[in-house]
Amino acid sequence: MSVVGDVPHYPFSFRGDVLASELGRFVVEEPVTRVVTNAGAQGWLVTGYAAARETTG
Image 1 (cartoon, rainbow, N blue to C red):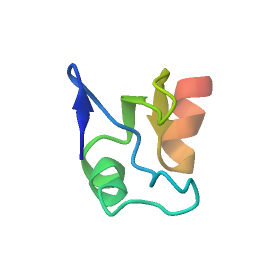
Image 2 (image 1 turned 30 degrees about the vertical axis):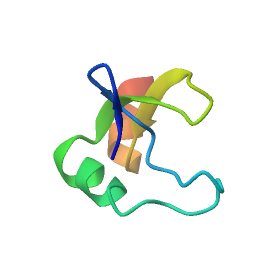
Image 3 (image 1 turned 90 degrees about the horizontal axis):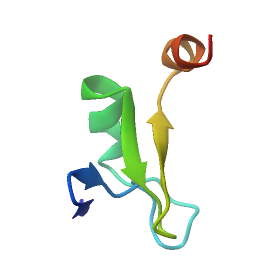
């Protein structure tokens, strides 16, 4: 997985329709983490319903 500064690159292939194997690590170890998209924009990767509910209230 590539990293931009200290932010990991969003784990999608450049095709945009295939999840990378690294996504499993985020689900287990970092269910809410800042990422950089393929377009270079920063965003949040939130995995799982419970984590999404916590972050959105």
